[in-house]
Image 1 (cartoon, one colour):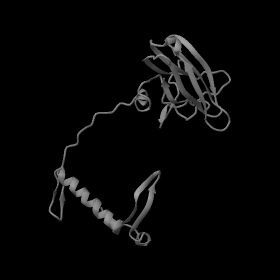
Image 2 (cartoon, helix red, strand yellow):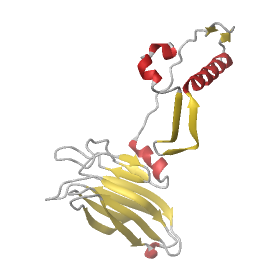
Image 3 (spheres, rainbow, N blue to C red):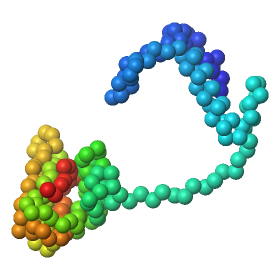
Image 4 (cartoon, rainbow, N blue to C red):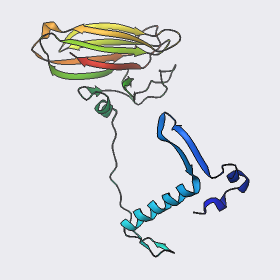
Amino acid sequence: MWGMKALPAEQVSELHDRIKGIEMGPLRLTPPVDESIAELAQRTAKLGVAIATAHGASDDGNELRIPIQEPETQPAEVFRLADLTRYWNSDWALERAGFGGAGGGMPGIRGITYLDGEILSTYPRDEVRGTVLRRTVRLGSSPVLKFKAGVDPARAWQLQVYVNDDRLLDKLIEGGSETRSWQEINIDLTRYRGQVVVLRLYQRVLIPHHEAGNAYWRDLEVK
């Protein structure tokens, strides 16, 4: 509202009315920025006035008059953890995941479910029943279930894979001492070829003599 007049003159003068740069965080600027700060402010203000007048404000060159509007209550957006698979891999449904707390499942504190790019992290809402990834699919002639299963250092979780009611895999996913580790999982589904099957991938965390942790999933596909 007050512009440069409200800023300490000795600090403003050091900028020499220029902003320069070739990148903003991970984003590379093309072309690089080399602009007058004052001119940028004027262009921004001009755009602001244009937006305001397009929505009912009046501008006589001296005053900008904005009509009073009644606020409109927006409907609440309900977020469920199961919605994460819409952005990760929409072929799969996520069940019984928990919001949790600490990243890997610290002693006495539950793990956490979240999406980090192409990696889905899960921790059960109910540690007895576990977290489930589920998919119903018609298999081809040479079907294979493939994915990578990850775990944090010094943590562990139990991976179980079911096709219908047949348990095809029961495997401990255990971390090392320094960095997150990954295991390649490849399961031959040829015996079910041509069938419509229900695939269930469980994360279980109640493992004797092991510290429970998050499960990390990536590159999950049926080929």
